[in-house]
Length: 350
Image (cartoon, rainbow, N blue to C red):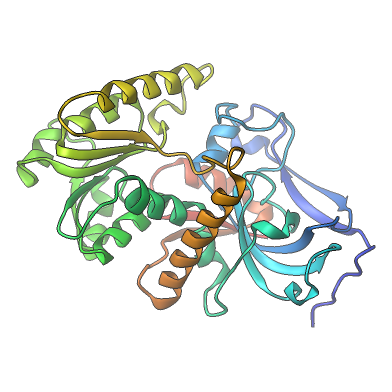
C-alpha cells in the first residue's frame, strides 16, 4: 500500500545529474530533498522517463535552450500523483499522468505544474506511455498539423526505426498513407511488418531509389538529420509537397554552437517557401508557441497527446521499447541510446 505524503513534508529523492560537458560515464547519481509541492504543483512518483536525442545534445552543450550545468535531464515522464499543492484537486492523488518536462524526468520523484498533466489510460503500461509523450505528439503534429497528409498520399520518413519515426509511420499507415522509410537494414523486417517500404539510409543512390518507388515525388518528407539531408528531401517532393524538418541529428557530434546551423536551416526554409512550385517547408518545434500563446499551446498539446494515448490503449500503435534500465544504470542506457543500433526508445524505470 502506497503511503500518501503529507503536503508539508519534504521528500527524499534520487536523481541523475548532468554536471557539464561529459561522456555518458560522467553522469552522476545523487540524493537530495525535494520540498512539498507549491501552489498549482503536484508531486509525481516517476515510473518511466525516456532517453532521447535531446539529452544526447544536452550533454554536449548543443541543445538550444538547455539550462546551465548542472541540471537533471529527462524530457518527459510518466508517473503517479502522490501529493498536490494548494489550488489543485486532491482527487488527482493516485492518478497516473504524463507530462513533457524538458528537464527533470530522470529522478524518482518530480514536482510539475498540475495544469500540464495529461491522464494516462489505466490499461497502458507506464514505459509504453512514455514512448508517445514527446515522440508521439511530435509525430502526430508533424503528420496532421504541419504536413496535413491525406489518405492515399505517399510520404518519406527518415529514421523510420527511431523513437519519432516508428510512431510516425504507424500513424501514417493507420491514416491510409503510403510510407517509404529509411533505416539500417537490420530494421527492415520490422518496418515491413508495419507496412513500410524500407530503404537503406547508407545506400549511395538513396534519392534514386526513392524516385524508383515514387517517380512523381513524395507528398511529404520528414527529416531530422540536418540541412544537407533536408535539401535532398526537398528535391524529392512532388509538386505541392511538404518538407517538415525537425532536427539536426547529423550535426550532433560537431563542435561549437548549433545556432548558426539552425539559422542556415531557417534561411533555406524561407527560400524554399518562396519558390513558385507550390511546395512548402517548415521546421517543427515541439515547444513552439508556449511563450507567445500558452493557452493555445497547452490545449493543442493536451488534445494531441490524449489522441495518441487513446490509440496506444486501443492497440493501433505498437510502442517500440529498445530497452528498460533502472535509474542507477543510466550510463548503460545513454550509451545504448547513442549507439543508434536499436529500434524504438530506451526508457529509464526509476
